[in-house]
Image (cartoon, rainbow, N blue to C red; front, top):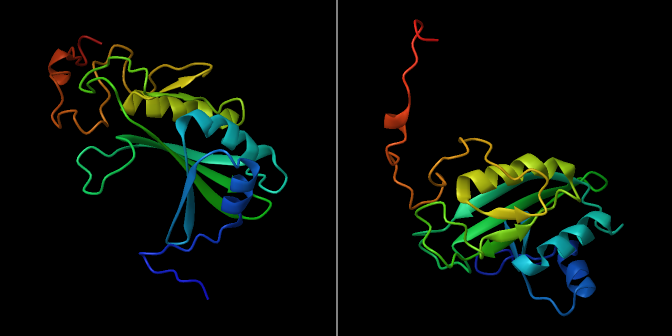
Length: 189
């Protein structure tokens, strides 16, 4: 019986061994929490590994359920990077859910909308067309950009919004954006 205590995770998910054997020169990390397995991939290797997870018949993760961003600023445990992007994959053939995570560390201050070359990932829209809007949301909220995305523009805030509001260094009350709104009432509309 495998030891599943929190100090020693149970990494029995078959994907870990298959991915490691398919990419022997690449470095991966594997985690498991409450029965959910996560493969941690370097940003440069992300697209190649995601293509393998979708197209290899042993994997067949044919559905990308969601993409989410995480900002680890101020997180109590050290992380490999400040930001993470998490991909939630599902294989309908096996009724199996699997997560892929990659970490990014900014090289420029993150308190504005400056385009940081370290916060770029390859888009997976060529693999799963449904990735288009979730990638736009991660871009809009966290400022992580996606290479080869067909329409990378803001989706929840306006185009000239002065920051990325889900970054933890964004002030809770904003930076005066609400004061710039033009008040529209029934008589002026």
